[in-house]
Amino acid sequence: MKVLITGAGGQLGRALAACAPADAQLTLATHADLDISDAEAVADRVRSVRPDVVINAAAYTAVDRAESEPDLARRINTDGPRYLAHAAAGCGARLLHVSTDFVFDGESSRPYRPESPAAPLNTYGRTKRDGEVAVLDELADRAVVLRTSWVHSAVGHNFVRTMVRLMNERRAVRVVADQVGAPTAAGSVAGVLWKLAQRDDIHGIHHWTDAGVASWYDFAVAIAEESAPLGLVPHDVTVEPIATSEYPTPARRPAYSVLDCDTLVRRGIAQRVHWRRNLRLVLGELARG
Image 1: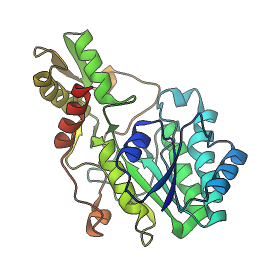
Image 2 (image 1 turned 90 degrees about the horizontal axis):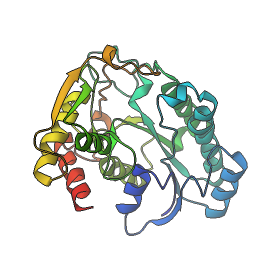
Image 3 (image 1 turned 180 degrees about the vertical axis):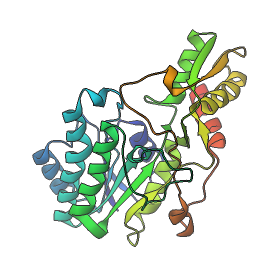
Image 4 (image 1 turned 90 degrees about the vertical axis):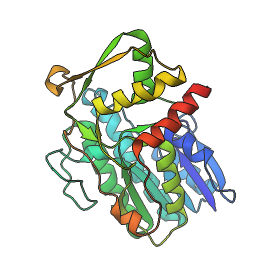
């Protein structure tokens, strides 16, 4: 199986490379190697690699900055996936495209299903939703859109690494307690993407996150509790809950963005692991350096 991975330098791209099946012939493309917003470059790379599967882990993920850089966010999150899907269609490849819980408005009181109406609150969410539509329009039954949430790992820019840094700089950190979702390890998403790469009977939109729910405050408390015994943060650090209104940001966030992952569980793709268990694995990796 020949696989082209875009966004290979990011936390998900690196997790994909780390857990790739032994029979996968990988072509890893970082942003420096391939700008997916360049249609000609995408067409040339896909044509030269002739992959069986393209996994798009590239994205513009600076949620707040997207409000002031909407054109750049759109080029990467909407146009790029469209170019990848068009190129994949031209060589008979499948496309696995990663999307986000931020396509929802957070007004629900129960987990969002793949078919739940999308209503993004911010530029990032809108560009990601438009990217989903573009992929499915171009590739139809040979594309999978996999939505996930709150992705973290021992590398890259993510909430876990940010909290560990702040907890070493300050005696107390203040964290929003009224936004709820599902923290998800990059390795968990990567493992599911590899299962999907080998299942050409699955297409359309699906969800995958680690099990359980948490607020950002809950997540931060867990990071503090699990990190202290590993020597990553001081034992006496305090996590203080605050409301979203106390921490205004350029981009609005959904108050509730838990995703229903039952479609993939029922189809035998994987069993979900609680987010706190995977957090321990990530922090252990971070502690080992």
